[in-house]
Amino acid sequence: MLFMVEMEVNIPDSADPAVVQKKLADEKARAQELQKSGVWRHLWRVAGQYANVSVFDVESPVALHDIMLSLPLFPYMKTKVTALCRHPSSIHDDDR
Ligand SMILES: O=C(O)CC1=CCC(=O)O1
Image (cartoon, rainbow, N blue to C red):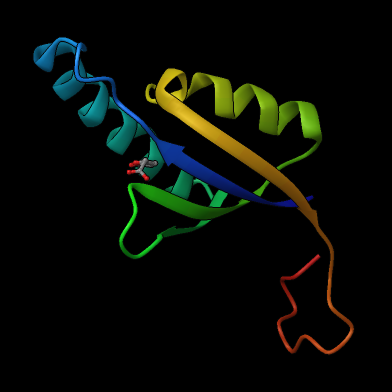
């Protein structure tokens, strides 16, 4: 199942810089691991915002939920999830 996930990151000024640096490094490692596994299909920066638009390919909504809550930056994120399905005019065989 494909889902578009919009993530907006807001790190409070009061956050400990060392903790934030660790979370940023852990987030990058986790995001790259999930991209290599094929689960995190697309990761795009939204120009001009500390936000991204992503496409996840997961077994179920609960699998997506578990992945999102496991992200180190999740506590600092506002998220929006949209279910996707194949467009009849798509030429990409891997859309589903
Ligand atoms: O910077 C972001 O948009 C948050 C984020 C998601 C994956 C990652 O590496 O950073």
